Image (tube, rainbow, N blue to C red; front, side, top):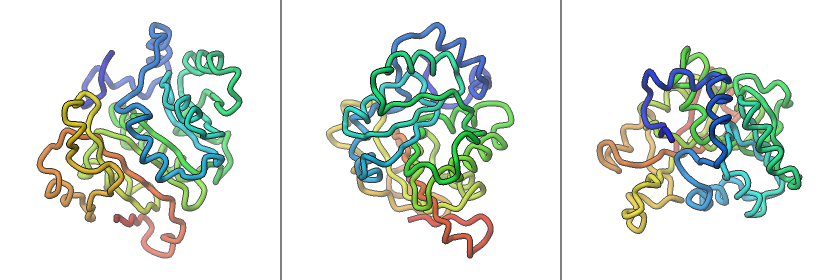
Length: 247
């Protein structure tokens, strides 16, 4: 299984449906990018406290994450992926679980959903995939604009990524109106350090406008995944066109 750490020439097709259709046609076992549900559950509980509210998981693939959410009591988890192959497989696999819905959809065009449809959106690697592909910036902005649109006001976009603030904050700023908090979590392969993490998962990391404060707190190139909690904040419309409030 390929890991998604940094972009390379081999990852340029990550934004293309044919790549994922081919890949999922050859892979039947479930796989979770970056983190599994149990490790992220404390943050999910913190930022999605109402388990009856609708949640969207983008780029779901064949991950067990959504199934684990439902096992944990979440009642309405909608999953989309650009690959019809994996969506058909997951729909068949979970056909007896009405809490799980699967739809073939490009995250850059979610016109099937009305504006303000979801209280929360979870992204584990989908934005990173687009940033590894062709026309990366343009596609990433399209995605973020759609994510923002289908969220309710004060809804949360939970972005799990390998991208440090110096690589992600400007992109978030330039796309939509967010209030942003940052959390970090040890990478899964670093199990030996899990008992003594660099930072408590549920405590936000101090975050200034350009993200430089994170290096001060965690050191240079920490071996963590970054979790951006981006809250849709329509009240920011009174300010500059593209404003982001970091906390």
